[in-house]
Length: 239
Length: 111
Image 1 (cartoon, rainbow over the protein chains, first blue to last red):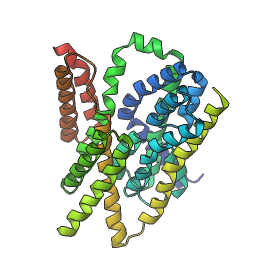
Image 2 (image 1 turned 90 degrees about the vertical axis):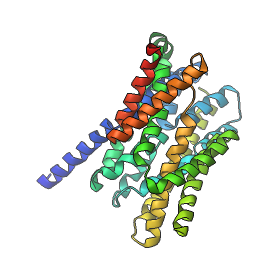
Image 3 (image 1 turned 60 degrees about the vertical axis):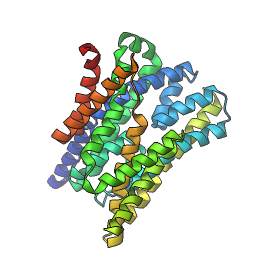
Image 4 (image 1 turned 30 degrees about the vertical axis):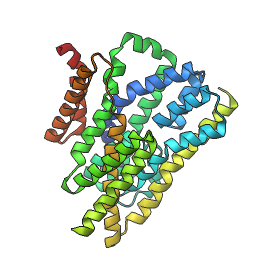
């Protein structure tokens, strides 16, 4: 390997670990949720292997919890699949939003990056990825996703094997760390919001709040993704 | 784990992956051309991203366990203000989250 190649690989590896280190707010949030999922899966009769397999392959918290409830309730497999996929439809908007912040030239890595694009990874990367040098962005993103993924899978496994014991020994863990998910979203919002996006975000919150009030939780994300940019386009046209 | 469960998990995993991958791939290709229209589209998608984060925040926030509810609400509000203040002052979401968690954990000890 020539010296420039070696340097490039070194920089890619450094970007990967930089991304992994930046994932600590996500890791703090995933820890209790993954433990709780492992524990719930074991109690739902999925076995520890089944719980871990679900986290390894699906890697989407809300639909994994829904899957447990549906399997436990004896719902038909086709209906179970449709409900869980409907819960994940919101992920459709993540790719286009993130693409807008990524530099061109990394198409080969997209299949790997796409796998780890959860709510939290998407949010954190939206605020940070533009500050990463263009050629290192996808390695940084992979590092971020890997750390989040390993935490999710590792703590699902731990929860399935000894979740009850861990939560009995450290009862504060569940309550305290469960705050980290809303904290993460708020912190990212504060860092990312600017004068131009303030009114669209308020419109999105109104739309999302309306759908939440109507008990249409999952549609509330899509509503926000439509209401916000539409408001921005209207304001832009009238300006 | 039954065969049915295994099948459901596999199909959900595949479907979830495609829901993430296909829009990313399509938009990555189409957004990286430099016409005025794609620049507007780019910004619209960026704004959509910020709006989605706001919606995810609304989704995830809930009153913590504890009695009386007013005290639980105060604990939540104080911790969220801490998150916002530190994130804004330091321009670092990670520090904001850590400060918020600390405030959330220590709040019951202060009362």
